[in-house]
Structures are given as C-alpha cells and as structure tokens.
Image 1 (cartoon, one colour):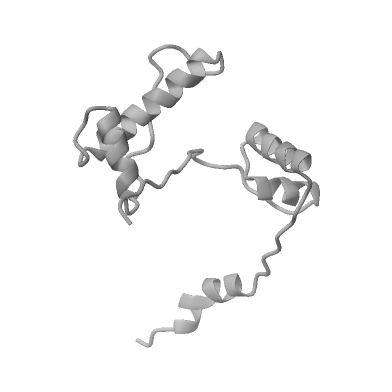
Image 2: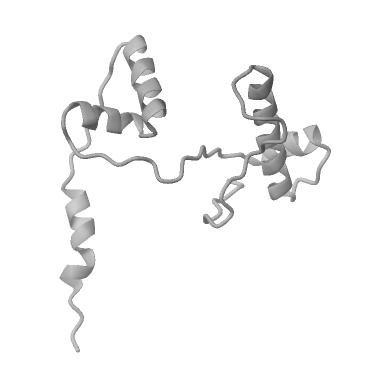
Length: 128
C-alpha cells in the first residue's frame, strides 16, 4: 500500500501559507486588549480576531508558563531551602508564593488555595 505524503503534510503546508501581522497600539490600548483578553479567557490576539469578526477560540486550559534558567533555579532552590533537582517542589512553592501574594492583595482565592498546574503536560526543557 502506497503512502500518500501529500495528505500527511497538507496541514503544515496550509500553516506556511498564513501571513502573520504585528500591530503596534498605544500603551493604554495594549493594556485594555490584555484586560479584555483576561476577562474573556482568550488570548490578546484573539481579542483582535473577535473585534474584526474572525473566528477565535477560548483558552481550554488557562495557565502561565515560565522558563527558568539554571541560575533562576539555583536562586529559587536557595530561597525555598530546597534541592535544585526538586523542580516539582520548586514549582509548588512558586505557586504557593504567588497565591499568597495575591491573597494578601485581596485578589486571590481562599487560604489554602494553591497552584495546581496540570502534571500531564509535557515537561519543557528546564535548563538551557
């Protein structure tokens, strides 16, 4: 049975045909777009798509991703008195600290709420 390579790469070929445009707005408008995106649980670029009548998707699993270099992990491990290899523990402590910060600002959830990032996602390269 012959393999049809055209079907295999058709989605990638379509993606290559897309044109990416960058927009520069005044600071206040950029902030408003980001606020609107957060309020509607969509990406800032999807706010533009929505305004202009294009299709867009809501964020399925909202999360914030951070990249830590080796020095960042060393700092955090020392700050939390943990071993640098305990990336799950460091991740938990960062989440707890962020939640506590916003709880003290009156913006967080209830005491005891914690960051529960999905563990089933593929791990990113933690050291560059």
